[in-house]
Image (cartoon, rainbow, N blue to C red; front, side, top):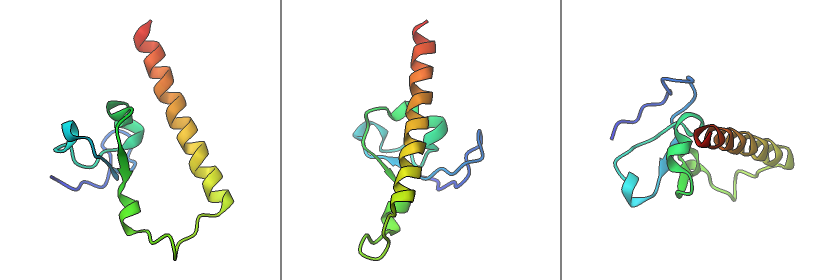
Length: 86
């Protein structure tokens, strides 16, 4: 498994891992570009491995920011699904 940090499509980070058995050889992927391949899969962000929740606290502003990112990602995936159905 190759740890490649930059996405070739959007230049974002390839920092998510899929925990599903069918994806165990996929390696890290860019959630923005490849997240639709893992819809309803158990996915972890690589950064979570290094976070000690007792030390690093998530502020309300950070939580709102992360939730907005998630909403944007889900809206994009919904749009792709709608386009695929048409």
